[in-house]
Image (tube, rainbow, N blue to C red):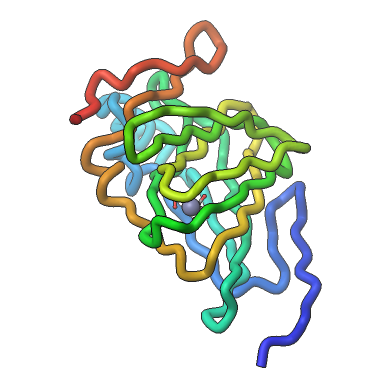
Length: 188
Ligand code: PAN
Ligand code: ZN
């Protein structure tokens, strides 16, 4: 039987206690997300296979709700900021919320029909991700971007589509500022 529990989420580190799982993603595993392949090789050669982001969760299969944190390091590959893979939920009716705890980011969303929206990520903002919108988080600041997410336990992650065709828009650094630009390699 599940019992009520207070779960501590540290806004400075993103640690979740108690937690039920954790994974990390390093630059080499995310190489395919970035347009500038030379910049990926350059990063790996100069800085090594650095940590890009970690996900920690509090998840019980018997419960319909799960939550956790994503802890994103600051950084860029060429003009593109560190970003998550991005996904649709397998169960298309499942929405999600992201509450930013630390840092500065852009949540890039794309509907199934191809409409793009962004939501600013900063402490004090809870982003609502409607059902069937692909979502990717981008750390545009110079400190970790940490957010807590809340979602249906069995929403599932569908990474295939975004991985294959990319997203229609990119968030790139231009003269020190994040800018939304059309993705030249978007494969419709
Ligand atoms: C989040 C994301 C997390 C990592 O928990 O899974 O931020 O992003 P990717 O899964 O796209 O690599 C969420 O949206 N869960 O549904
Ligand atoms: Zn999600």
